[in-house]
Length: 153
Image (cartoon, rainbow, N blue to C red; front, side, top):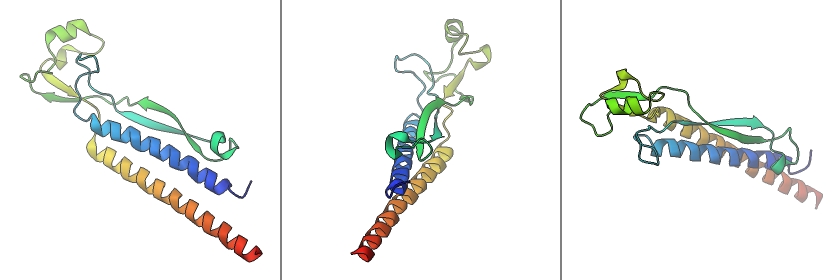
């Protein structure tokens, strides 16, 4: 374990939390998205960050640090709101065109993303606090190294 390993470990956490915040921001930006990029009826699916231990590209050791391993889609159900006059309400032709996506019971409902704003805000707050804690680790480590060098000088 080298002198700068604590900084490297904190740097890996900073990077992972920054990426997590990007995923959360994307979820919030698509809170009401009911159509896919191609314009077809397809609600946005909430994304989740999955971490794994080890960040050898930063720390030089696969046992230290953390990495954002993948961004996966949430398996939660879409929010259903009864609004048959909404332009994005599910119609009978949508059920016929995409039976794997829509059911008969969806007709007249608008399917909204499975993104819950309070949950995303809590996740963003947690990610921010973890980020701040790792900034503190970097600052404290730098101060310890500086003090050690002053003692030696």
